[in-house]
Length: 84
Image: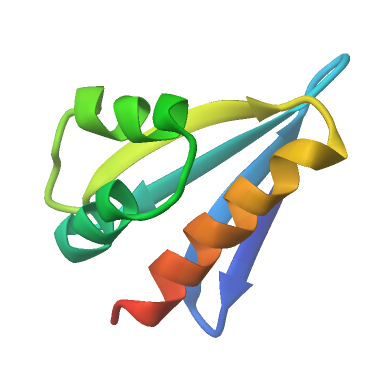
């Protein structure tokens, strides 16, 4: 497992699997709203809408199958790091 951090803030987790990599990320309420208004794929937006809200935010896990899936991860990181 790989944990991506900036200073002491955890941005996301990457977990390898047989034929994919799982991405786990938690967005707070403001970042969640930005994600819904963004150009993220609808499947990711739906995962956030279905995720139960907790004090830490809404957490989701989704698979990365190929390099074509990476722009969505980059956009999520951009959203998460712009909201403090």
